Image 1: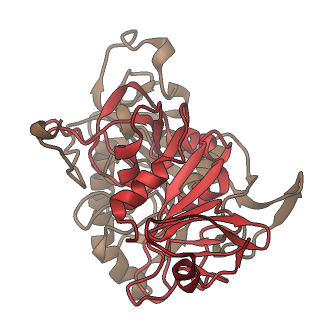
Image 2: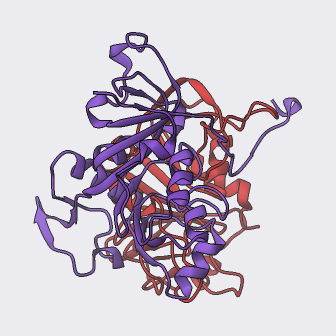
Length: 234
Length: 208
């Protein structure tokens, strides 16, 4: 089956519908599926729910879909860098569900692994656990969290082969792996599609079984907080 | 003289032992890395990295290599990368020996509040709730009082909690306190700080 598509719009063709639930990879602006987010903006799909650790910044990442008011709800752990997000949230235009970061990652991983719920200590005794089922194991209290089953997963990897095997680079792997697994369909954008056989089978980060469509493109890869030291400090 | 930021960070670094895997929060906790000396400490960054190195030299920044504060960083010869689910599996699974975190409030039962002030802009808890619930030892580093002079070491936290009964040790500009049965125990006073000054600045119950 052909998985490689010519551009992001074609890679999403037939997959988008109003009111859908999308899981997106990335941490801050690192490893975000920027080409696919642009294509969703162009497609004009409305009332989207995103499970994504962050919401981008005003003009990059999921932020571009907030500007066009295409997002109905965010499931995130940290949204601090986005003024338009705050404006829409405080005015009631945008729903927000905070998940602890590890709970969000595990909800995606669990959904992708066919596990509808799991118990965790994270958040017990805080507002996050309000209204959720609690259960004691070995004298400690845990809270039930549910797996995420998204309509679509969009992720960004470094390299792919044409069967969808993915390799990520450094900390750009982050949420891309769990997000990819929890979508009914996963579309991956990559910096490079390499010939079959040129990725080391022992070093595949995400096997192609999880990836339905692939698109290659050039990425801006914006840096959110440029921090450096001077050579003389070394 | 109470401790300054760097002295608090240096005192927190004394908590770390050779061979530990440690997660450092943003602010004063980040400075702790400067004081580990010859100890073999591996720093975890919860966005998916063990073996976090210093900031890159100008021109060497890599957009694919950031820490949990989204700052550009570098890798070391020991570095390993992994995805977010794996990262929090090692946190929740108790593999990280200690987390050193900042706080808005801590109380005598070890409750911690550091993510939300109702009525103010809410940014989110990030990985803080997972860290305090999962790591072996939670060490809070913060000023003993807020800018109005009110104690941040309370009988009971007033802000929404990050974790309940999670704090093991509190390091402030006035000294070191442990969370024990029935309250807090003074472990150490900063140079020139008297026990009376520590008690006066602490709302929480201090036990012997």
